[in-house]
Amino acid sequence: MSSEQPASNTTMNSAQTCLTVAGTWAGFRRMAPLSLFVIVFGMAFSVAAMQAGLTSTQIMLMSGLVFAGASQFGVLEVWASPISLATVVVITFAINSRHLLMSASLYPWLRELPPRQRYSTLFFLSDANWALSLQDYYQGFRDVGGLLGGGLALWSAWMIGTAIGVGLGSGFDDPERWGLDVIMSCFLLAMIFGGSNKKQMILPWSAAVLATMAALQWLPDNTHVIVGALAGGLVGILIPERSEQKEAAS
Amino acid sequence: MTIALTTATGFLVIAVMGLVAYLTRIGGVLIMARMKIGRRTERFIYAMSGSALVAIVVPLAVEGDAAARASLVATSAVMLTTRKTLLAIAAGILVAAGWRALFVY
Image 1 (cartoon, rainbow over the protein chains, first blue to last red):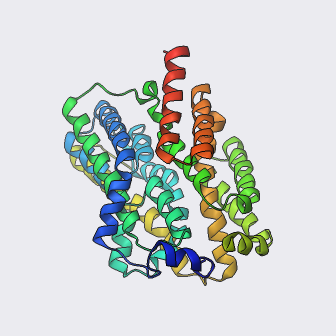
Image 2 (cartoon, rainbow over the protein chains, first blue to last red; image 1 turned 45 degrees about the horizontal axis):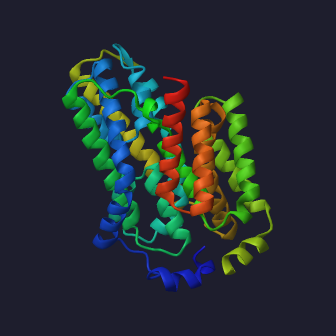
């Protein structure tokens, strides 16, 4: 892809992939507003986790290590003795399987980083910082700090929210009432409409929508992101390449 | 395999969860590293990554309540007219919260 964005490479930033402190700090600050809302979800998770019988230390550790809200809530549903480790693995894997695709989509970029930076940055991979970084990458921006810094902001907010929830013991457990459950989808939707490549993506995205809806209807839970993304990717190969180059040149 | 849930085994379960979650995060890169990346693969990744975004949002549009759907419409409208991300998200939250305050709670 890099060969297609010569203009933006020179205007946006250096063309060399790197991971800088300045870029990480910039990414942190850029994700800070959204992270404030993540605090509320952290609180909601703590409240749910305490009701499920986890200790405070366990709750903090789960948020810190897993850092993926949906799968953490998912495991709470089966948190009872005796617990099936296989079920926990399947839930965690299935709900987080979209990370596989997100991580694969960043490969052309991350492969140029030293392994230690690459694999520590990936620990903080989450929907929001991935979406923002992907946009950066296709616009020719090369500092992976945006991904790491954004992830650190989200992780910190998740931990702060979890800690507040543990401290309060109860209280804020109804994010829906305040419209907070739609934040992440609204953010990702804004990313979709904010991209510069909308016209050439009409067909792949339409295929993704149809495949996702079909998967929601007929396939097991949590397969829809994989199915939709793969369908969109396949259609992306099938459409003529010409339009892609024209778009990039404009 | 089931295990009795004690404080100690609870930590084990959490550690396993953390490991699985991390493997999904590095898994995509590890798999891609073993593939030959040609022009077609690049185009596949490019279309797939945007499609993953779309696929994450679709369930709320399909299965969400009216407030959630209205919030997605509001976010799209504000984003397309102003191109300001935070404004678009704020509009989505306000519409969802306002709708629920009026018609649900």
